[in-house]
Image (cartoon, rainbow, N blue to C red; front, top):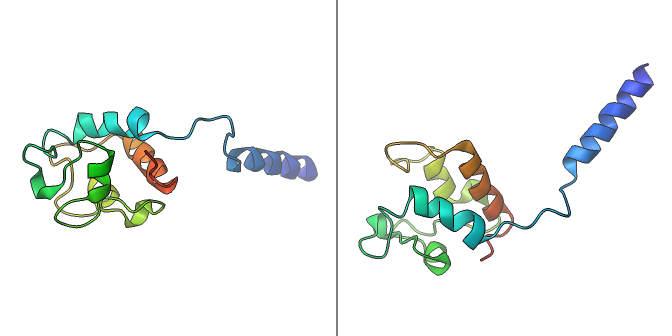
Length: 117
């Protein structure tokens, strides 16, 4: 019985640990831009970007703002955008309400995958 349980758990964790090769890669246009539009662009657009951070397009996101780069491709934990939306850095963003956990997970995954356009 113990062997069966061990094998079942090993099979489960092997399936969970392997990413779905058929899943499409995260896309800036499809997955990230709509989140930024919904939660961030009312304050961070080219018209008058708070903190110098313009989030109106991929190139602008990659430039960052007055505090430096908003993201570090491949390093979500070191990315200022993630620190702000996870409310680990002040002022937290967005200021009045938190992003949904699924939105933060999408941003983290996109950055971890290299933040491709």
